[in-house]
Amino acid sequence: MSDKPEKFIDENGLRLDGRRVDEIRPMKMEIGVLSRADGSCYLEWGKNKVLAAVYGPRELHPRRMQKADSVLIRYRYNMAAFSVEDRIRPGPSRRSTEISKVSREAFEPVVLTHLYPGAVIDVFAEVLQADAGTRTAAINAASVALADAGIPMKGLVSACAVGKVDGQLVLDLNKPEDNYGDADIPMAMTSDGEITLVQMDGDVTQEEFKQAIEMCKEGCRQIMEIQKETLRNKFTKLDDVEVPDE
Ligand code: UDP
Image (tube, rainbow, N blue to C red; front, side, top):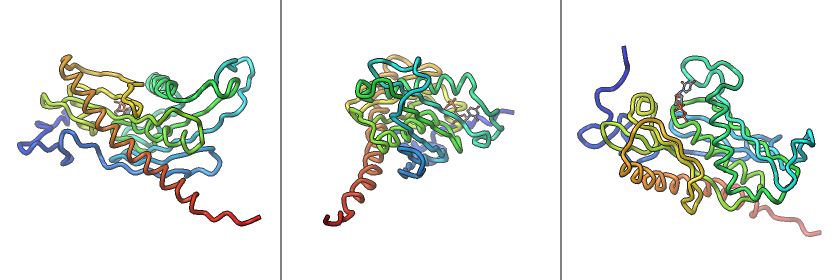
């Protein structure tokens, strides 16, 4: 028997988790949580829990994999075996390989890759608890971890999804909306609104697609504020540290 809810949006315009159609789930982030990584970020977004770690830039071995004129970015999205209801088989899958590829590409336009020829930057995004929107959650955490590692970037990347349920567009899908909705469109963008990732599952009209981009822009703008605040909190605290006189 399907667990599909009869209605996703009630007569007051509220969703199953009480959110309005244009509201994102509560998000909090912590930076610098891993002492061995150059940069790291732990993110909770609704019931999603994701840890991102960045290593590098460091010299790439084997040398034949080096790029002469730019740094190589590697991105690994991984779901922990215990992150979902049914255990996930450890190791790469078609899904995780695809998500890793598109997520890496979401960062390529912002990282100043030409500064580190021959080097590699490794980004690991580990999903500890999954509840829809994990690829976007991982990108949000990875973006802050890259900044925490001091990787020169044109700006942060923020991501969230827009979907369609009960014939209406909704921002930041929860699990039932993701499972049983009519569309799922995850996007990532820069602070200038340049889209660096867009995927689509399901059907929307051209007009709805344009609206979805606008909704996503607003969601990403709010997420970017949280990302910046997380970074500000760490780096202003560092500014406050008194440097002893020589
Ligand atoms: N999911 C799952 N098992 C899987 C893959 C996904 O239970 O093997 C769940 C998980 O909660 C995930 C959601 O389904 O967040 C939606 O998955 P999707 O592939 O749409 O990616 P996401 O929305 O997480 O980026």
